[in-house]
Every structure is written in C-alpha cells, then in structure tokens.
Image 1 (tube, rainbow, N blue to C red):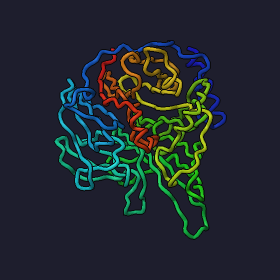
Image 2 (image 1 turned 120 degrees about the vertical axis):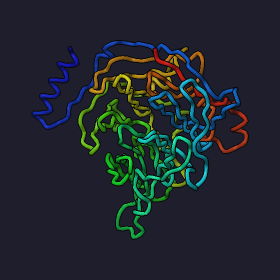
Image 3 (image 1 turned 180 degrees about the vertical axis):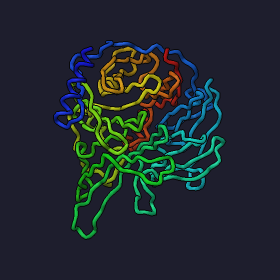
Image 4 (image 1 turned 60 degrees about the vertical axis):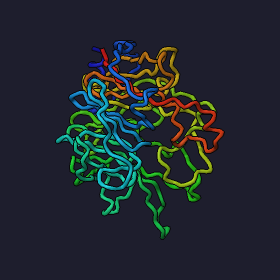
Amino acid sequence: MRFLTCLCLLLLSSIATAEVPRVMDTDGPALGVRPLELEELWRAGGEDETVLFGRVVDVVGSGDGTVYVMDNQLCHVSVFAPDGEYLGDLGREGDGPGEVRQPIGVVLMEGGLVGLGSGFPGRVICLNADGTPTDSRFPIGEPADGDIGVMISLQFVDGLLGATGGRLVLDPSGQSDNHAERFLALCDTDCATPLRILQKNTPLDPTGQRYVEREDYYIDRRWALGPGGLVYTAMTRDAYEISVYDRTGELQRVFGRDYEPRKRTDEDKEDVSPIINLVGRIEETVAEDHDPCVSRVLYDFDEDRVWVLEPHGANDQPDGILETWDVFTAEGEYLRRVPIPLGDQMNDGTCYLVGGRRLVVIKGTASDFGGDNAGDGEEDLEEIEIEPLEVICYRIR
C-alpha cells in the first residue's frame, strides 16, 4: 500500500511538473531477504575435458531449455540441451562466412537464427541452428555508411535488437574537438534503420595516454531490454538509479534505493581500466575512490522483475554467499534482497538468468587472466593458479 500511495503521488506530481515518475526506496525491501533455493541440473567444463571454456562473456537460453554459451577466447558458442547434453559449437574464429572475431554476445532471433556479436567491426553474424551461415547485420550502423565502430554488448527481445557501441570522432582540421562517442543502438531484426539513443561524447586526451574513469562511464554492462521495447539502465554513476526508456529514447520513469557507495582499496584502483580502449596506450589512469553504484542489470521474464547487482552485493559477501541481488518490480517497487547461496562451492562466479526458472553460473571467473587487467610478465602468470572454467545450470525452486 505504501508503494501504491507513493507512486500515485509521484504520478500526480509528474503531471503537474511534466517530470517522469521517480520511485526511490528508503525503507528497504518490502519482502525482506529471501535466499534462492537452487537445484543443480547439469554442469560442463571444469575438470571434465569433454568441453573446454576460455573466457565466457554471455549466456542465453531458448524457450525449449537449450542454453547457448558465448566464448570470447575460443570464438564460438557452445550449445547444451535442456538436460546438459553437449550439442556442439556454433561459429569459429575468422573473417569468413559464419566466422567471428572478438565476440561479445549471443542472441536468439526469429526463425531459429543464432546471432554472434562481433566486437569490431560491430556486426551480428547470423547462423542457422545447424551452424550454416546466413548473413551479417549491423545494429550499430553499416561500415559502408561510415559507421565503423566497436560493439560492446548485445541483447535481443521481442523483435528488438539492442547494442552498445563506441567510435572515435576525429577532426584532422582541428576545427572541432576529438572525442569518443558512446551510444545504445536499437533496431528491428533486419537492422535496416538503427536508432542511436542515450548518446554520450567524451573528449579525448590530446596525448592519447590518459584515461579518466569518471569521464568514461557508460552503461555497457548495466542495461537490460524488457518487454515492449523498454530499456532498464543505470545512467548515473554515483546514484543507485535505474532509468527506464522507451525505444525512442524517451525517459519513462526512474527507480532505485538509498545506497552507500562501495569504497575502493588501492588494489581496486590499480585494476581500473576501460572496457574498450578508445584512446591508445594508457600511461596514466585517474581512478575514482568509489565503485559505480550499479554493476549489472538483468530482466527476469519469468516474473517480470528487474534484478540489480551493486558492488557490495558482488564483492562483500559473507561465507556461503556468492552474490546478493536486489529485485524490483518492472514499475520500480523494491521487493527483496536475493542472496545466491553458492559461496561454499565457488570463490568467484558470474550469474545469468536464462528463462524457465533457470540460473546459469560461470564458475572460476577469477582465473581469467586474458582481460584488460592482465599482467604482462611470465612471473605474473606463474603466480596465478588457473582454475578451468565451469558452466553450471540450476533450477530456481
């Protein structure tokens, strides 16, 4: 009742002031803390060398229970039946038909098409379910039209394809400032007319060697497509706020909760680096004292809920808990805190909702030393105990 009253007041206020509704919780989750009850369905990888994983960057599920695991290092998608049977791989590294480089995501589109997102040049390589290639599509724009950019994340819901991207805008004449352009592009499945929304321009350091974290903040892993073409995303670095936009980029509402940002250690600051380096060799990094207030956003289509992971929930967990997520209704009511009780089984992991009341966890992500924060010397690799990645699928009871 308190939520409905608050929402009605906000709606009335918005009509009077032409502002969108804002729902910011100050009382805590209405249903309290409710840990997930999980039943393991299957697992792949790990010590079992039947299936190997390099660096998992995306996991999606189909309506029939099939799971698709995108591997950025091995440049293919591993496919698993609902019972966990390994069905094979789709795609491979290369530049030919059905081949991909720097894959960043996987989407399941109409007609049984599987789309492999390529980072650069930003495109989606489309395959039939049997792996035969069909065509390539360009959700951030056709390179032939001058839209040569990097695609960083990719999602598909109800005929709408969304992708975050970036590109350098350089003026050799010096009449305008050089900058990095960031955006979320939305388009229909054919990618004929991508619409760029939530655009942000960041000035480039003239030396090309200085990275300023605050200026570089963008939504790349902090957004989710929901039903009806709505986009749920964390536009503000220093506030726990989820902004909801329609597919034209019009802000519909904002919701969130009271939050104390997570203070970083010196080691945390040393690990700061851009998701994608658009400036060249970095000699100086200006890192913030606190983490961004939102780490990830997921949409739960089983219950029409928005799942939000904040840095405390991702890092500062008690024994036995892997991560703790906040769950909101699609309208913004803060429902519950959801601890994932797998901390006794793994030290580090990344979670994905794949539909059908299923949760997939990638175990062993801390052992991935191939990313931006990797050490360069052999002694760095010798100090890292490499744990084979493992994909584990659970049913949420």
